[in-house]
Image (cartoon, rainbow, N blue to C red):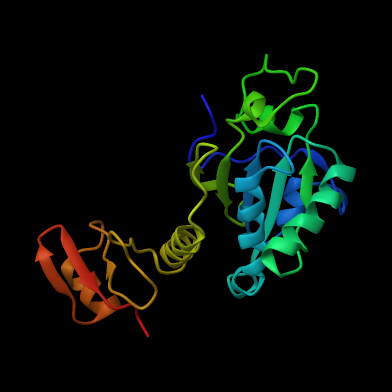
Length: 217
């Protein structure tokens, strides 16, 4: 069984192209997103890391650190960043974990314990290493997404999900389908109508258990 929502991620020490550190130290008091990839110099992954680089200002606005992981080594990561930056037209300033021994992928339950990389490995040998983990400042997994190798990740959705998680954490609310910043949120059923009025003011009772309101000012 892989990591579940609200599991604390393992505090393993990782080697990256920007140095070695423990994952919990890297996160600190911030939010963090880990993007994993099966191999350097692969087409879909290059466009994805390019998108991550282009969104540097958006991550900063959300007090969120980003970190990549790939099964190749540090020197390969440094060379790959040249391609990433060429595709993105932006600096790839985030670290990429070197995981040639699969230690990190196994610790994060992306691959089974008995998995290994054969000689002349291809991306197909580590294809399950294609996940997005959003981790809170408490070091707990808040959301995960897993993609196949032939479908690029939707980073508008990653940002939207991050906004929803941060809003829910700050205001103790939920967000409806397709929610975006500025739209009505859902009042949790645990809050009775009187308390909901005190906290949110006017709200829309669509159903007895579905009440929507603007965030408190």
